[in-house]
Length: 112
Image (cartoon, rainbow, N blue to C red):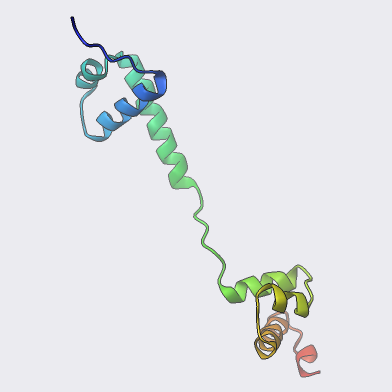
């Protein structure tokens, strides 16, 4: 009696995707995974579409520390809340706030 492995749709897709990545031809995959050429074609198309979508997704990098401060100031957070939220000493937060005002072209407030 032959041992036949029965796979669900997701398992078949995973198997076919792995075989495609290894460079197997459609005919080989069809025999090894016991799936039709049409199924392999659909899985290949889906895999290609997913790869294109992932490539086109923007990559977000975390904000630098100074950008985090500036963002909080732009949101209207008071200096005290920014200092507490980011655990900053007074002299550091005052310098950062001064830089923020300079960037906002509010140097007149900096001198006050």
